Length: 354
Image (cartoon, rainbow, N blue to C red):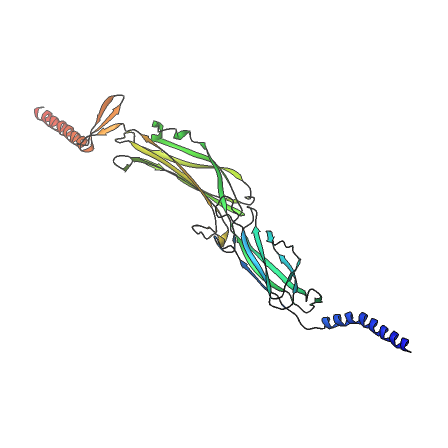
């Protein structure tokens, strides 16, 4: 009889061992407790501007944008959190974390992850949204599933600005500026240059300007007439690689043949390039939301004088070591009056004696 009682006790004990886990699981599944994880994503790098990724290669402001996502567990139990995100650009994370991984955040503790955002230099200018989703899947050393826990999201915006730049420049027609020559007195010609450029925008604009001026050096007066030119070229599509284009700028200069002072001739030209990206092209001084490029150059020479102006206004031209005296306007008028008077009086005398 005693052996039968011991056998029954043993059977009950073994049965409890098998039934107890199911009771625990059932109680856990029906447990309304749903612990939460506090998540905060914020920009870490605020230079030169918060939330901006600089992809232009030829600037000292080229940076990787960084932000931190902090996971804080205010509960006394450990939490297992599944983390996923949506993102279109390059991303590196420290400590290492892959999209869809689960992490364990101990009770009353915090875990930080550093996200470094990078992009190719031809990354299209736009606002890129980073969306991080976190979901508590288990708690209590990962033994108890949390079927009633809800996911939560954190959003950040990373902005890529448009840019364009001039990589190289070469004059292809500049023999006309090989020193100041006499033929520059009356000249119409074209300055030609090859411009190499690229950018990350779908459309860029190149503005070219040439100006030319001639000035008497000592008396600081304009000499003759000169005219430059300008052009605006809009290039669409396929600008995300280096292109080379020839740009022609016409000019003309018309100087006086008689030069009473040394004449300085200055030719100035410049090329500006900008992406045309609508509202993002709001220029700032250090960090440009429409970051462009600029190139300029100049050539100057001196055309020597070939005449002298005396105190009475007479101009004496120097040519082949001979002095040609050119009277000024007042002297010329006096001579004309004297000649006309002489002719008049001679005609009067002739009529009187005839």
